[in-house]
Length: 251
Image (tube, rainbow, N blue to C red):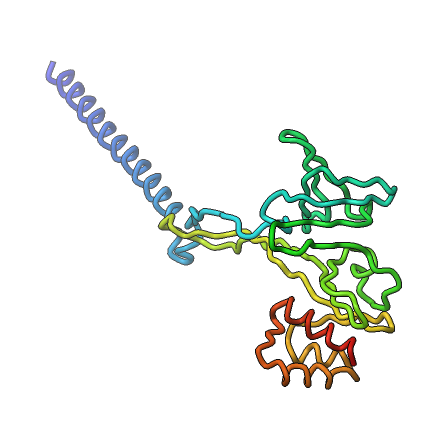
């Protein structure tokens, strides 16, 4: 009996020890898993930022417009086929190079630029119509001047035209963690002016004294004299530039 009792006590002790060992093993496994999870969250000691995740809560907005005008306006379109549209409302999607035509409150249509011969937009009372057409025979290396519609700002011995142009600029990649940062895509107006000389050569210009005098070449001094006699002239204003170019025709 004493031997049997002693053997029973030894078996019980062994089971207790195994249970403790097993609990320690499970606890060790659990601790290791927690450590690995923590390391996965904050990175390893050798590269603390290797597992960091970044979040961008920025609000993406939009600046500018692909359209020439803010809304529909009366006007006139003459297609290459000779067909004329006069009773509709119009706008010019400069970015897509399409003329937009509103035929009714629920119906609109678009014409590719190459199918249009003439476009006239009438923005409103007190504003001159905007006239767009192609000017044949220009001597220039810029293909757009030969195939696109140009806005005629002034026609004379020295003519001034504008090439409408819109570019699309995507918002920069920027991280924000407070959710207050606002980013914007943008349609940027990069329209350009060109002076057309009597020999049909075209040169890109800015509406400044220096740029126009250089492009006018031998007629440059005449513009200089006009500006001296008319010191209030502001060439950055299209109307003032038109008056200055018109004065050259009288000399």
